[in-house]
Image (cartoon, rainbow, N blue to C red; front, side, top):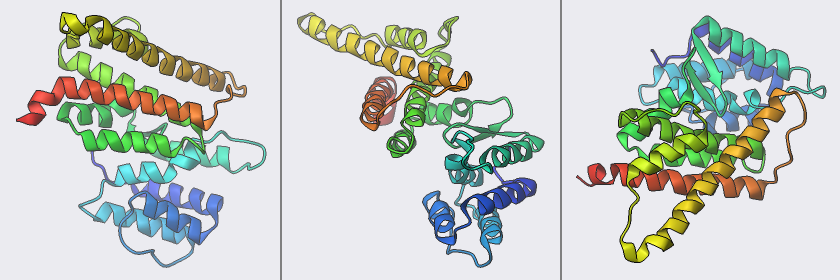
Length: 269
């Protein structure tokens, strides 16, 4: 799979974003924060978007599809509403353009091959490589959404735990649970990690591990209720930023713990 942004996608995204934001300063901030290279291009809003996306394709130090995903994330992850009728049609136009090129947009700014999951494309690779910095970046992205969209932040945190567990299970040739939700996945990983401890500390550490299991279940339940609400077309349960931030930080602790247990010896070599 090439990581270049197809010309038809550049055209669709540039047109949609220009009509939605219609602000040079907003677009400048959006592209720069997303990692688009170079100085601000000249031209109107649509021309600026197009030239900047093409520049991403031409820069060997940039992953164009990764930058594209971050650029369109805020627009694509919001719910269409009656206040701004450009959102729904714009999202569909971008999705259709991606689909024509065998690509798809996934929640939280992932561009993947049609039928692939974010975990299959990016997160699994990070875990297999022991790429702590990239995982930290994914959690930073989740935290950055807490105040604006706490539901999306929780969804991202849960997805990272699930991706870690699935990658761990596949990597070690373990039996994947029939129900591939966060709870059963974590149970397989926890058992295989061999969390037996010195008898002197067994009860103490058992309490901590039981607490971790509760955190995993809680994060998964958050995501389930939020996802179900969106799927039924009703207002999702209210989540305040402090609650979302707690879920994201708790997920981060679990993921880093498992990565250190799994990859610690290899990373130390």
